[in-house]
Amino acid sequence: MASLSPAYRPGDIIIADGTVSHCAIVIGEKVRYSSGVRTDWMVLHATGFGSEQPRDGIKKSDVINMGAGRLFRPRAMSEAQAQTVQDTALRLHKASSSYGTARAVFAWAGSTGFGTGAFGRLQKYKERLSHTEHQGAVKNVFCSEFVILCYQLAFLDEAQKTRQTNPLFINL
View (cartoon, rainbow, N blue to C red):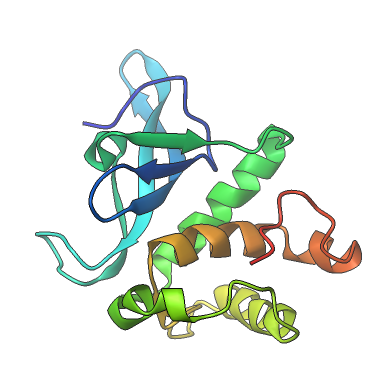
């Protein structure tokens, strides 16, 4: 059962508490019921675990499956921008990606800086998202990479114009 809490909005980031940290992005799905239409809140997250399709990458699940954790929301994000983040996350979900176990384990060894080739790689991913026949936008991804990628791709064009000064563009 999806959460019906009005406290969520598209683009919220949930970071679960636990031994191994995990994060996800909140999406709202409009569902038609006999009494009208309401928003059910779900999360999209990259994971290598699950019963229905183990190791299948980006999954959709109930917010309550994230357990206890923290909710993060950009203060300056408009409803339209939140919808853009959600639309980007849903397109990435539909694209085929595998969970990057090795990437997740060894992420600590990499750079967290936004390197000189980063805009080029993001542009490549964005272009791949626009082609339905492509194998997928990214080959492997882990949870925090997925969340960051949603924000980067959602605000890529504006960030390129403003030289990364958009506060919603995650500069990692």
